[in-house]
Image (cartoon, helix red, strand yellow):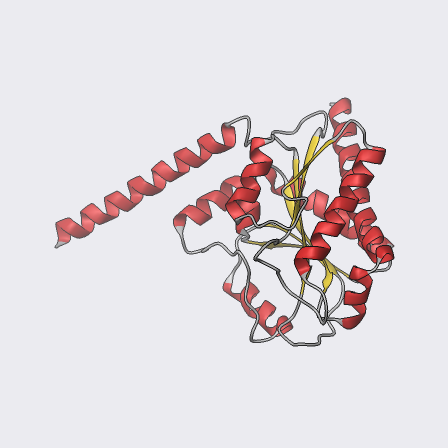
Length: 268
């Protein structure tokens, strides 16, 4: 029995070392590991949900439709004002992609930034929570989940969360953070600053072990643009003016990040 336990432990250690080596190789591949460049040449916009997955919903609208509308508006702003920057959309119609497929699209196209666009909601049919928040990849502690439950209600379920007790998850997040965390936080902060400038309540930049971010080998953020079960926010997010303002905030955040990164590279 002792020999079997010892053998299982050695097998687990070997597995984890092998997984770490494979992941390091993944990051080093040019399609996946985007080291700081002089130019931000290509951006992946990921409209959350789609197809059979409607995401959260309000009284009359679904998350998947709002995220797509906003992502297309952000693309238009980039194309009009940053003609040197390419845009890759994970979807430009009402189709469904698995989480790992979304990151794969960004990796395959060698994008420099990954921006997922989502809409928040609380379990209550009609909620009062309002505002924006941006997530970067990090380990989600138990107290983080408890705080989220307290804020959003007992029916709250985290979507697309990695198992933080899995050694592979810890390896992936540690390697991602080493490569991209500071850049992701910087990008997220610039986007949230733009929302605050518009007068939207901003909950700031936070860390969460989101699978969709772990699958992309580049700086990335997940932007929650409002709460769909708040009647005022639902009306705002479905309006042309509201969607234009949200898209502009995301675009300006990208623009400010791009200018900072590229000017720093020139100085160096």
